[in-house]
Image 1: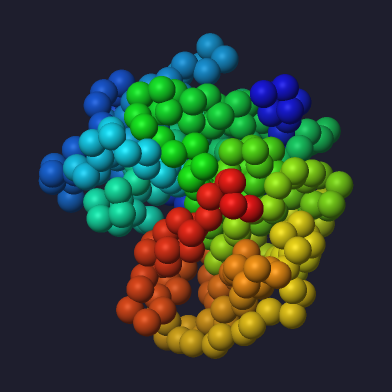
Image 2 (image 1 turned 120 degrees about the vertical axis):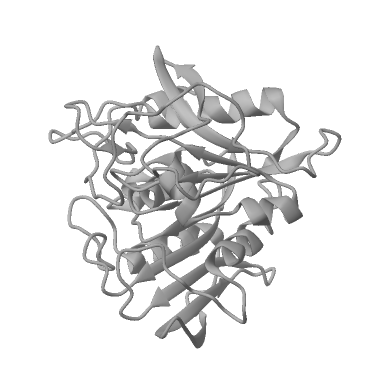
Length: 313
């Protein structure tokens, strides 16, 4: 926990997925999957649950499938919205509830706080700097959220996963660094890792990692942002070294949603694919459609991350 708290004053670049406000929030129950949410405003986190961390009420939306009976430990999947977004918006964009219904895992959509100056919602995913816009302890919050859910549900502590979009993808990457003792695999979509990962990220354990990124993403350029974010190539090189994978990937080209996609698979000495990189040619800054052989993005993410446990890395 001490390691987490050392990174509580972190910086980031705010990018919008949805406009948002603070109306409609409530301390309520688990999301009702049987409700008709077609006319709900996605900027409102209805049925949000509240947890207090460091004196601040933090919200999240929780989805527990009917298959869950408490008798068998189940995985936990965390899905993080983009900068300016909401937990509800992320749930609609990356809806994994149907997958949880069949695969029997608990799904949580946490809510980021507004900037210190009252600006957009965000995840504090970067190291401290003079231009720091945020002092929110998001790593501590996520760690506390995992603990709280584990006290109420039979969570398999070896099967904790994270995905997210944009700024939510950024923090998914960073969780692999600073909660590396807990997270088994991550799947960032249209996000980037901290710059200079060899200096800023010192994980003790390997990590299963699935990267989905478009070559025309101007918000999170594939080549990185100097002083803020590493390039995708630098990120892959870093994790390839940590995971002891081949630097010569198997490349599989295919087409989805009218776009050409190149799947780069990096295999370890045990023939496990520790890194998958879906390079979407001409792909923009969105939750990208990488459907392959009839399997959509959300299912591909689950199929990949669910193959990892923190005790087999």
